[in-house]
Image 1 (cartoon, protein in one colour):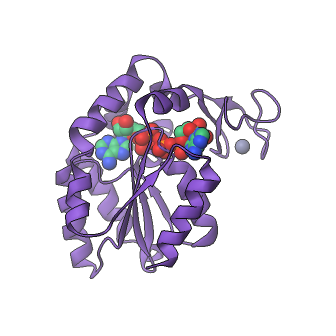
Image 2: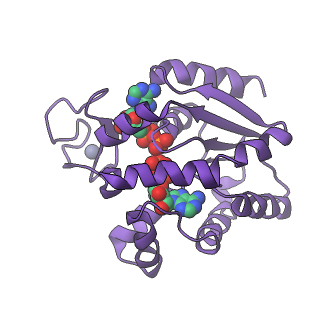
Length: 215
Ligand code: ADP
Ligand code: ADP
Ligand code: ZN
C-alpha cells in the first residue's frame, strides 16, 4: 500500500503513522525525522536543513526530493510505504509522481488530517518526545507517567526547538501558502480522503482503518 499522510503541523500525522505501522508493516518515511537525524548527526545535509527548520521554513525542494527518491528506491519500499510530511509543495508532488512512475508505482491514498488552528497551536506547544526512542507525547493529552522521563525506555524527554514560540506560527503560515494547495492536486487524482483530526487519536485511527480496508 502506497500512502501519503498530509495535514498541517500538529494535525497528528506522526501519531497516525505509528498506529498504521503497527497494523500494516510498511516503512514509515518521515522527512522531518530524516532531517532531525541528519541535524543530530552533524552531516552536511543536517547543516543545510537546520537553518530552514529553525526558521520554520521548508528545506529547499532539490534537497528534500533527493533524499526521498533515494529512500523510495530501497528494497523495503517494494510492498508499500507511508510518507509522512512529504510532499509539501507542488514541485515535490510532481517529483514524487515521476519517481514513482519510474518504479512502476503510484500514490494509492492521500490521508488528509485537519484540525482548527488553535488546536494545532495548543498541540504543538505541548508536544515533547523521548531523546532516545523518539516516542512522541503531549503534555496535555498524553504526558509521560513520570515527568521528564520516557515511559518506554526511561530516556530524557525533550521539546523540539521549532515547536517553541514564533516558529509555530511561521510553520502554519508556510503550510497554508505552500502545502494546502496540494490537497486539490490529490483530490483531482481521486486519492484524497479527508479526516477530522480534532478527535481522540484512536477515533481518528478507526476512520483511517476503514479507508485503508476499503482499498
Ligand atoms: P510537523 O510534523 O510538525 O509538520 P515535520 O517533522 O514534518 O513537522 O517537519 C519539520 C521541519 O522539517 C519542517 O518545518 C521543515 O523545515 C522540514 N521539512 C520536513 N518535511 C519537509 C518537506 N517535505 N519539504 C521541506 N521541508 C521539510
Ligand atoms: P504532526 O506529525 O502532524 O505534526 P503529531 O502526531 O506529532 O503531529 O501530533 C502533535 C502533538 O499532538 C503530539 O504531542 C501528539 O501527541 C498530539 N496529538 C496527536 N494526535 C492527537 C489527537 N487526536 N488528540 C490530541 N492530541 C493529539
Ligand atoms: Zn524512550
